[in-house]
Length: 247
Image (spheres, rainbow, N blue to C red):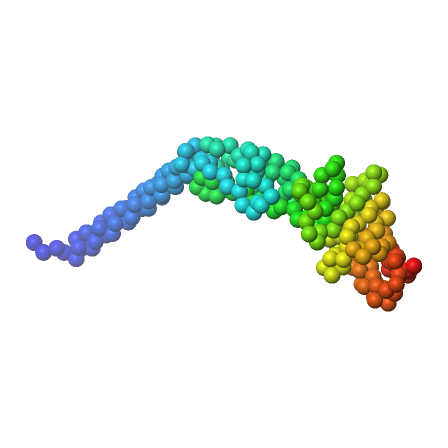
């Protein structure tokens, strides 16, 4: 029997209703499924990062070191192998490495999936100083940080007195590090008494009364002009660069 217009309209209405019902049910299940997948992924990620041995520390590497051996850095860093990489206290390891006198700066980072990288920036000597019968390196910040068997060629020596304090030694290091290369090459040693009583002794025996490290660039310029203008002088006083004297 042929379907009447009313019957056909009713059938189409039922079909559209059924499709809408199915679409609504699918949307609900789709959100549920997505939520389940998200939670599963989150739980899996937490397990991998904080509990799985797949992301635990199996290697610790050191970079940037020349004076320090890998073993010494690793020993003081004390990064626990086998610990979850995400839980390693990087700041604590960096603080320990920073206590080494040779270290100017250090950066400790995670190297996923199972490593830690310790990148060291070592100090650079600008002069040497003899302390306790040993030849030690002195950096621009006045930190004594390494031993030498002999005085490196061309490196100025700092000679403190028995009363020279750490501040004066730091000031002397600042003076040496600020010297232009041509002047630094002419310096035999630097005598230090106090922070404002620093004297350069040139390789030819002439003396330069430098004062403190203040205005060192200007003092170097004034000295270069004085040496040319008054070649017979044995003492050049640039401690007050605006009023230099010679004798």
